[in-house]
Length: 201
Image 1 (cartoon, rainbow, N blue to C red):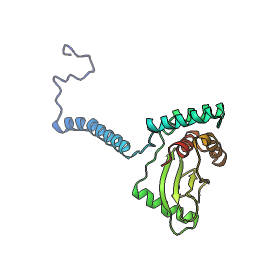
Image 2 (image 1 turned 120 degrees about the vertical axis):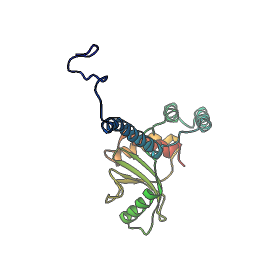
Image 3 (image 1 turned 90 degrees about the vertical axis):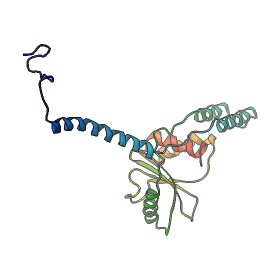
Image 4 (image 1 turned 30 degrees about the horizontal axis):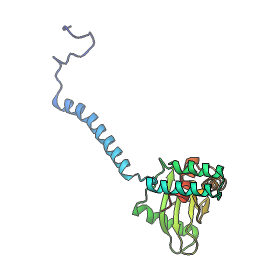
């Protein structure tokens, strides 16, 4: 046994690896790292998040709420609840990605489900297995369709919501979603309610 080695260990000073063996050992970890980097890069590139409210818009809404409270147009509890929503960002992790390919597939599937000639897909929200698809049908108010699974293979939405709402109604919208879309993740209900009352585009 040579000095500096332990019995049973490989002495790299005297062991000779064939070139192809050495290259294979080097390439394997490098290829794994390259794959992980590409996957990570692709996911970050493809994932689209809900934009946050700008500081200017947040300040304007806060001032409006303060004036409404001062003029007794709203109560203190409603003011506090609305300010809490305004300061929050409950859409972290909600996927808003909508590629042209996905939009076309969704439009075809939803038109079939709703028995309509055409449907225009405007927006999408995805979290875990749940999806919300915002569409224009041309025959009614633009609805948000709720799906507990893949909208493309579904027979139809679990429920639908349409209309307009303000920051004073955010909690009410959340309660409606939880009651009418059983099993929907609370995080998605929070994001949807926040979006349609504070950050609708």
